[in-house]
Image (cartoon, rainbow, N blue to C red; front, side, top):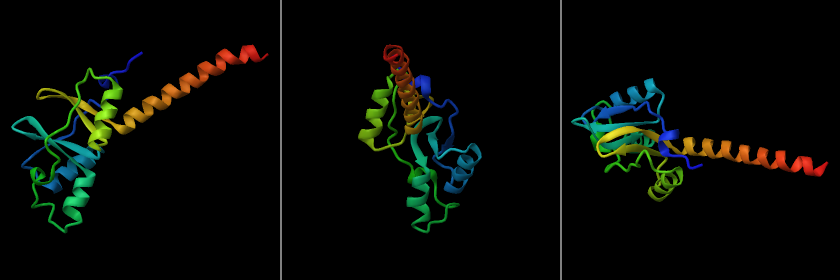
Length: 143
């Protein structure tokens, strides 16, 4: 069975505007308990801001988060994956791009986000099921 990105993605999208301050974006991310927010400009996805961006690009440089705009520190252009892509495609994109969060989109329509954690948890479940299948089929032959 081939699993698609849409089967595992998180559908609750956290978003902020390019014109929001880093302080405001941080509050939204904390409220939603997410380590990232998708960045929109005029309702269209244009980037992503992560905890790492906040720390490395603002805090470490001793910048004032209430004065820095999200658009100044976001990762852009936005790298995305189609909701119908298989998980191995998503994993390859993430590895090649060295990212841990991959927005799921088709054109300008955002469907969700798939993370490395989502993929690892899925494959952990797959491995557990495979091991149980092997044990189930081999135990009767050992007796």
